[in-house]
Image 1 (cartoon, one colour):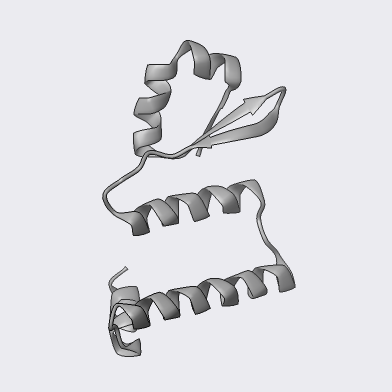
Image 2: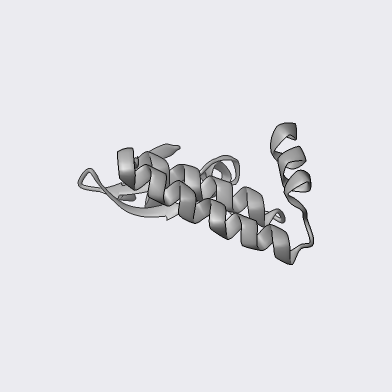
Length: 98
């Protein structure tokens, strides 16, 4: 994830938009994160992965907190898979494909 200062983001807005189409861009003010720019894509799952990756870079989880978050995420994914009619084998096959 690329990070730029808020003044630079203002002065180079077009470039910011171009970069955000390739990767999340963190905007900082006085060295602190103030905004995250993600480009919407047709693939909602890809956007969710970009967002999750950006969050993990900003606030990495460790230990029990990481395990609890993984369990929460997996439960949500399991429910979404069931709603879409996927079996556990279907999900495992998709995971194995990468």
